[in-house]
Image (tube, rainbow, N blue to C red; front, side, top):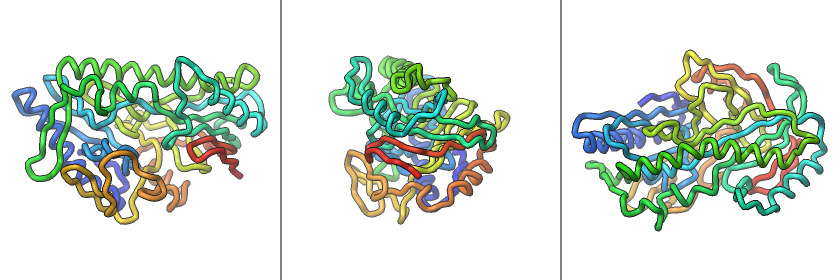
Length: 352
């Protein structure tokens, strides 16, 4: 395992569980290949609690990349693979907050046969932001979105009735209540082919949405569109971690600045996507049919941000934390975007 975390109490707790996940991935790879194989987990500075309980019960947390070496294709399905990322576009001129929000709501309410909008689900959002020219980024207005490809959750998530359900195999850990559910062979190949195509799909999906909102009147250019959740290849799943050595968005929390960062390519091993979710009393226990987090038992569903886990941005100075992250993952801030207004599951917010 490669540990690039801040080693806070939550991360120290999760790292012990990731060691078992890594062991199970290697165990399955060795079993399928008929010879000794390895697995490797890269834990990021934002390693934290995942939103999806199914994912955590399988031993997969946010802020890490999971890789394995195998002669036989296989996919650990509790990674709940989809694709998720951010896009940043520059506006050609100033737009009023009311006009921006009116345009956003018009597109969200408009039915489109190609897409099912989910910008107001989970931790996704749409934001109008502004650069004051810091770090060299052009002064002006920008639009930022964060979202996943909602249309394909039913094709890849290990829910009842999914197309690969009968092909799921289970490997158990000898010393705990841990397990690894996976698919192999043709099912794994088909799964990856879907996952691979989703990367381009989500980029085009965000472009279409932003272009629809801004129109030719306000749209100037795309700054970045990058994914932090998905499969960069057929033997890796990144959950809350960028795998492309290009400029990326470092997310913080609702209302807080969003940073644009250019990583040091010579030292690149991935990059974090945000601050991550921590626990007030870091204790995670795996049971046969559930997972206990801070003494609360979860069998399925999702955790509640602010109740079950806390955004690290709520308890730390933002600029100082960003500096700590960049000390671990060398890179340069090339832009700081201040949020003006946003739309998310919490509704419409106007930020001062």
